[in-house]
Length: 138
Length: 138
DNA sequence: TCTCATATTTAGAATGGTTCTAAACTGTTG
DNA sequence: CAACAGTTTAGAACCATTCTAAATATGAGA
Image (cartoon, rainbow over all chains, first blue to last red):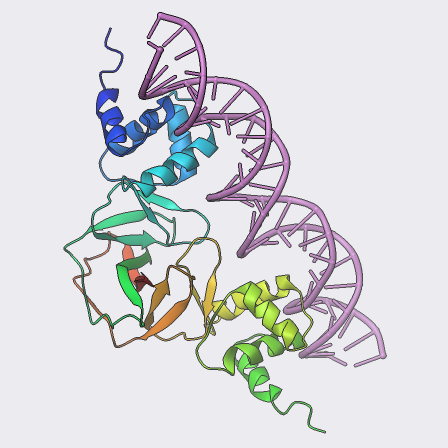
């Protein structure tokens, strides 16, 4: 039987990125990229993997998340001290951040316009402009 | 002799904010507010206090920084996981963040304009819009 | 298919920033 | 000046994350 029916896509994606498609990485890639744009933490992904029947260590989840980020499959979003969020949407976009429950909501990349950014200090180049719209229950 | 010559201002400021002007709080307020706009971490302020001849625990620095933030004397800036920065400039403004050394540089509040912020989700109100211009050595 | 070198995974220890605890101390108020 | 509430403190506890060293899996070549 074709046991790789759904994994093929993930394995290919990993190979293209220069990462060996190990069982763990394929499993995580499946969870990450098969459900639209997502924001997750190492812990939440580890839990989700467990619920889906995969067995892997939290250290591997951290390693994988960092590797995926390194090859551009994920983007790290740091808003709040403490936990690091990983975003499966790697394109240009911004976020609403709910201060009550720590959740993130995407704002499409062409929605917000930032004008008037001054020239960076000598010898520096702008890497990215991040906008976070902090909201709370009213 | 008038031993409170320079402390009076700090003590008054603290009282107005509803905080008892203890020795430790007055000392930290002096370091924080007498040298223009500053960005610092608990550890850097603790070191600085030590160098200035004050003796206080790191826990007190954390407590004080959080209390000052609570009453609006400071603003917390969270950009990078790990350490929390505290900013003595509580007015509206934005930051350059240097990814190479983790330093922050103020961008005056009337410099950058953000347009097109969408309406927040139902039941939510915008608290603040943060802009971080990430730069690196070029 | 078998072997081997190398990449990966893993449990558990280690780290680093921050908060908590409980006891000692200080500021204020009567 | 007594007495209580607010503060400080040392050190333990916490939490997310990284590191370590040893075990395991993967891919290439024979």
